[in-house]
Figure 1: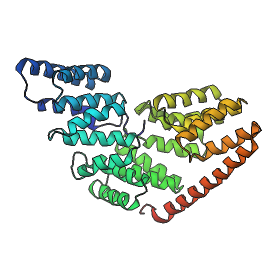
Figure 2: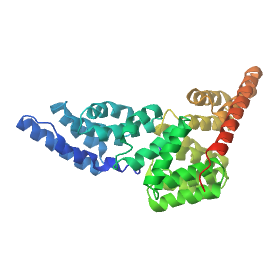
Figure 3: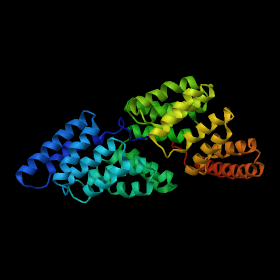
Length: 354
């Protein structure tokens, strides 16, 4: 699920109740019913029952489809249910009205961020970066979105603004941890992630950051409690399930590994790496055709996933399809060269300030 899972989402907790007072004028009976449904939905959402809350908000929406407050609440409940694509339409309607526009625009930006639709995320969030109620979280998402879009100057500007306005922000420490991790300065990265958790014990993906470093160091027993801490915040954090699966696979706990990979896919079906993991398990069991199918699924989602392409080549060779295997190995070399060049650019131009 990533950064904006249920535990990491702060703004959304009170948004529905804030907007209830903004309902449009309506005939008295309909208005009373609408307000009652909205109030009940808001209470249910605060209690953690997003499905029941959505039902009440949709009933309210049927009474007044043109009310932006109701549209926002429907989108908010869908967001909390992780129905991200479905949330965009009602939030888009709420965005068209002045009163609900900032909140709806911000939440749409979060949805686009989680869906990796980064250009759309930037378009929604840029107008909000100066607003104090959104600034810290907005600037963090802009830093990361621009970085992943390879627009280094815009990312740097957003980072400098974030550090100037919020010098003690947990987001700043998390970004520094990510930067040090990219340079393999792992002790410094762990310190930054742990500092982020001291500032905000519920900071999304900071515990994952420590666990991921320990995983890369093959210190799997040390990685596990950090991964479990992340899952306590966000039970559907897909990367955590995936790396717990990889750790289990390394320990030859194959049933646990398969369960983790399948859980990652249940949370996020369009995630390439768990298919790689399933392909590895099938290969280890000498089930080469299923392995081939899973590895091709991984590459359909991420053609640059080097390990999946390498393992595809091995599987093809096992099946006697040597010409195809050689073709895949050439692609592996090309991807490796691209990754090396990108890493050199990071080292040269994106080193964190001391």
